[in-house]
Image 1 (tube, rainbow, N blue to C red):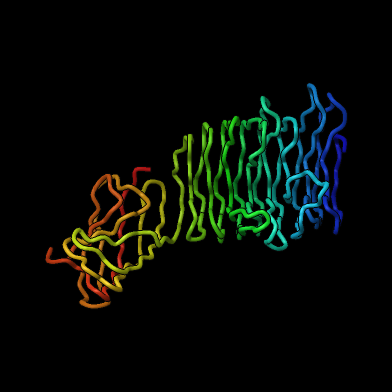
Image 2 (cartoon, helix red, strand yellow):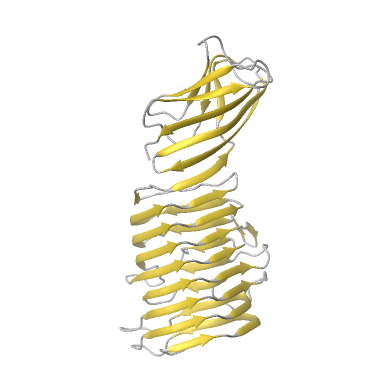
Length: 365
């Protein structure tokens, strides 16, 4: 509490909250605060940015949270505690800028109760926080490892940098029920984000989702991230978002569909891993037919996640029955590749058929 403060080398354990970063009366900024090299283990909030003053000149700036080890144990919210459960809560009631959260280790103890790793936002309508940096952190085990909260009367964010972090093992909670997602970056109703930089992050082992974006984000720079998550996951769900999307991603999907042009296949499975860099995607994997049913005509691999920007071909080998070599052909503007026998012959599918395949093509986004 108070400007020009250094809080360092402390061990805090078994409290509801660890450190509250707060300023004084109305009209007094909080500035030049360093929280560094502490070991904090609490049940609800390890570090909480708090501004309860009103009027002009009540901002927070030049705040650094660095090189701390922070752990939130898995407990039920105290009845009289109004704060959102989080390891670091950057949600002051007035504007803040030049905030640096970097080189910290954030850990969630268990996974029953909902809790966020870093909660970042602006709680006052009509104000804009800017120059916020979240970088080089290791964040493990929270319901949402990074979250822009859905709060009433939200203000806006000018520039938010989320770079070079490892976000891992986002766990779905039961109290309350909430899906485990690596990062939820959604400008909520009434809120805008001018510039959001989400770059060079590694997002892995989330139970439900990797990265979700949406809302009114004017400039989204989403580059060179490695994102890999569970089978239910959505990598990038965008509403009114402008982005170049020139990023790297890798994922295994089981949602591609084997579809004949005549009849119907009774039972099949697909498992494809894709890597996407910029506007180019490459798939490899397996598509198997356990019961061909009445399938006939031509055979298509449908519901691929990216639309083709040009005509392209790949290759497949049927290794379960005939050993046939096949081509994969995708037309421009589609998300379905046809599996064609090498001799352009009859329907390539049959009960027991198993296609090992590879396909690359340019994408529209």
